Image (tube, rainbow, N blue to C red; front, side):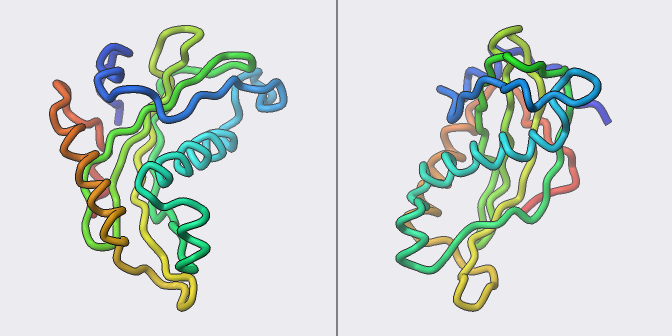
Length: 166
């Protein structure tokens, strides 16, 4: 399945990127481009910023003995990323329920001004005392709902895989 063609201008409708990164040389594989394993690092780091935006900071998790965990991922690889290139990650929140958040992240290669990949994720809140999913804290869920509402005005449909929902 191919993702729909998205322009950088469309992605920028989401507002400012939540994360920026310049690709180090050691991320290259034998093909000379970013190895697939580093995409997980990129999206994990950007996910930490997303959680901070939802009041799910390291400190709040320590106080609650909680965390978040990804349940499912899908990545569309649109164009190569090479060492030394500047990246910006944008987020689009799609839906939330009592325990799960469905969102997309878009990596824009700022060096080439092109969309490089699309990451789709289902994330959940976890009570680490019992190591099970638990309801989002009310303030976090409220912030997620506000982000979803803000992103619902995009002029383009969310390029979801069709395999995930909350």
